[in-house]
Length: 570
Ligand code: ARG
Image (tube, rainbow, N blue to C red; front, side, top):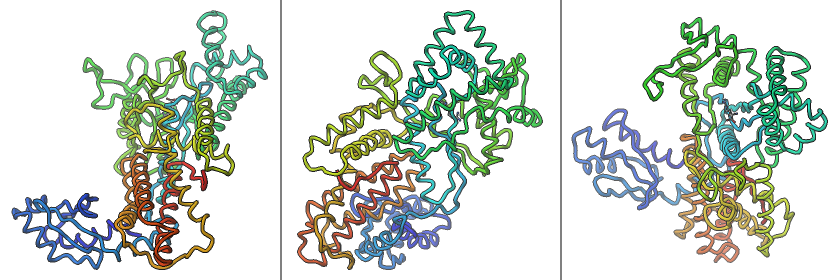
């Protein structure tokens, strides 16, 4: 189903093409009208004609088929378009009857592998993982909603030399005690204890090193012990996902270790393509354009001189696997900005090897930091990692207190408090342009006013309550847009598809957040100036109820694409 913007665009395109083949109108939302056509000036310049003349020709020749009420030529050649009531009504009716609220499927649906969350075994998930998890999950939801096939990959850090000391520490503690500690979610404590022994105790250090050799050699007992660490961690991560409402499942966990068997093939393939350079016994690829501060070329180390493999090799194997075995068209990596160079270099090597090309692209979906109130990296007072689980629980606690202050709510308070807290945390994260840092601030994110999760959830719940208040409410009938606030709401409602499209375009859920916030604001203005249950007559009441219902659905579906629940009462 085309969006209103597309329908208007389709009317303009033939006229533009007659004037110059291949030229296109550029349609934008406008402050002066509903839409503004911006492509006229560029076209006039290329034709060597005065913009106003071109604008007049377009106005004379275009057939808007009743979609546009008035066209105004403004300034040096902008066209300001006001949509007709009939067009709004038609569009809203189409949206209301569509399960996807008018959001079209991708014209060429893709297989998209989304690499996100990816915490490390036996280490606490920190706020950086929160960002990856929340942003990644929202992107998966939007991609699926628009008809793409999404394959989630939770690339957990489950391999490497630290596992020597972790396994030895597990043995020292005794399996049962270790499992008990880990299942309580004290991952960092466990890691720290192992590290302390490793640094202080020569015997322990030796044991740890031998254990790494056993692990890499595939010793069965060692792998069993390693498996305990991995399994306990996965379970803990799963509990966090469950609490946060994340769509990742255990089946999506394909950790670093899963690629072990593919690493030799990566070397063989790169070697066959003549890309490997021996650098002091290490096998490296030097992709063009990457140099250190002294201008020397930087390597991607594929195999270390001790024949071991590292983080980069694993990512190369993962790219190869995702492209050839999963038939991906597109690879997304939702990982913090500090890893930008790592991914740029891996992608460059993968392109040299022909795994990535014009048809199969990889993108690093980078994001900024979460800061504490002091605007430094968000840490505990002692300078440690903020435990995600503790943070989520604190959120629920605070939301419960916030709800208690509001007299009006009934329903299952604990459940609603939980929905509110998760919504607040997720929305604060998602509504910041992902490249930027943001300050983790409970008071701001939990506020019922302003650009927050609770504000949007509350707007939705308030609409739901309208429907609970009347028993004999009229349904159906025509939509009538008599009041400016009704018209403004209609315009906003028709923009949902474009909001989803633009969020996907830049892979930033913040675009959708902005849209939903504006929708809630338009609704508030409408609700203040247009009585619904006290409408002048039943026809207008029915029309307004339809606008209410459509707003509620759009908020609910939109929030769901952000991974945020929309309770019906608060
Ligand atoms: N485990 C890594 C970390 O905590 C993130 C992994 C991201 N994904 C990847 N394919 N490298 O920083």
